[in-house]
Image 1 (cartoon, rainbow, N blue to C red):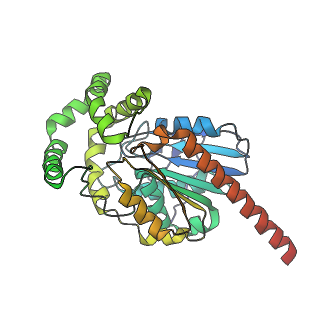
Image 2 (image 1 turned 90 degrees about the horizontal axis):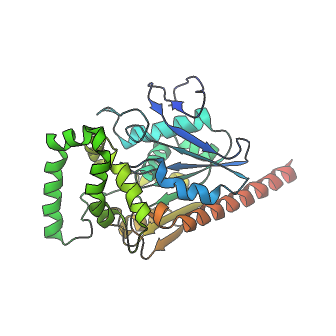
Image 3 (image 1 turned 45 degrees about the vertical axis):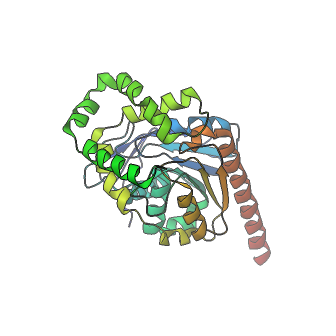
Length: 317
């Protein structure tokens, strides 16, 4: 259940538990439809920038990007609030407190999972406010263990190393050295390129993603791992049964492989599913124009449905 609290001023937002979230709005506040873009784990709103630019010419759309607690410029998350459930509640509060009218929700990776959690805990918001939804390179269940596209034996070895690294105090100290962000970004760039991108990505997209990850808090990286392991929102997807939906992914995605998109599509048989053959996990960067185009199509579909519904209501009256 949502907690009543004051409407926040300016471009940012304070949740009911006092957590400050960074929010950016683009376009006219009185636009008939708002698109809310939720980013992925260890990333921030910058990964949506090319999609925002591509959509900004549409006067009928207001665009809202925000940063999850524990990410980007938002307040840190505690161990207890480093959960997908909390992120879903934060999104529900954001919609209730800051955004009026119908919305399209688009979630990349962890952002898509937050949308699913919101649907599970606040189904009334989906019915009353959500005109369309886009799940992009995300998962509804069975995310862990992630084989990274490797052979099983190699994947197990990498997973074991990853667990030890995540719990390493050396990693925590390294991540806390804010002055070393540029150095960290350079060091992790080859790994980011291999893990998160498909064939022939743009150098600037790789560097941007590496900077996002390098600027992440070490506790954010560590504390969100259990909730990713436990994530299962298959049943919640039924909430979108009557909602125009998109499911997008890159075939070369090592984190949320094609099977995750197929699992979502099975729960949403009416959804339009699109795969990008040479893209990886960072679809909003790798295929920004195409993603924006699909969201625009979804917005037009919502407009048609709204218009048709209005006609029916007038005739019934």
